[in-house]
Image 1 (cartoon, helix red, strand yellow):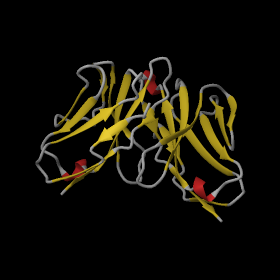
Image 2 (cartoon, each protein chain N blue to C red):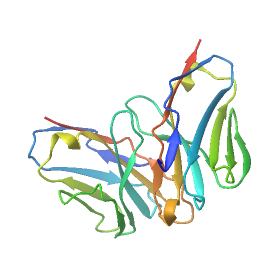
Image 3 (tube, rainbow over the protein chains, first blue to last red):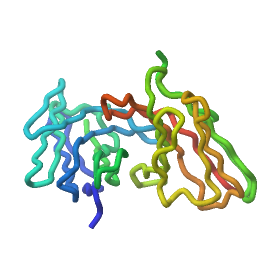
Image 4 (cartoon, chains in turn red, yellow):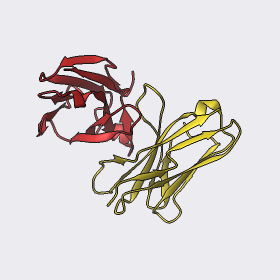
Length: 112
Length: 113
């Protein structure tokens, strides 16, 4: 089992709709969770961090964390073509280590 | 404050040559990380420093790889005797001890011919 798993997609969503991205992780002791956006050929850009169970909202983005189910998700409301990118889920604290472990990323396409 | 910077942005080299990359973290950040990313995959951790101390190295970091952060500011990553399998994007990130939020630089894309 991979430490952090994401559906690689591609996920296609019409403009203006809600895009839902999911991630599961293996270590119950993991401490912090991050979503990064990566455009083709560019480096990861931080979108959201979340540390406790529940929802965290920032503009059109909402991160959701459920530690009991070892599940973290990202919702993008009112999707725009500029949201088309690969979204990386990253987990810190797996096995107590101070490093990010990434999923392979979900490629999202927003169709005008 | 200009964020994390990396140089060079692109490097093309022949198999067997040595290459060195530089990373300058965000100025107040004391932790610095190196990752490697290949096409279609998420970044993979290589090593990290807290100030000048190298605290963890991945087993991905073979004998041919070495990283330094001599004064706790910028860092260098050297790859000796490059192989075609070393072709990847090398990413540097930094953070402050009190938070674990990592900010990435633009990366150095290495192509080994």
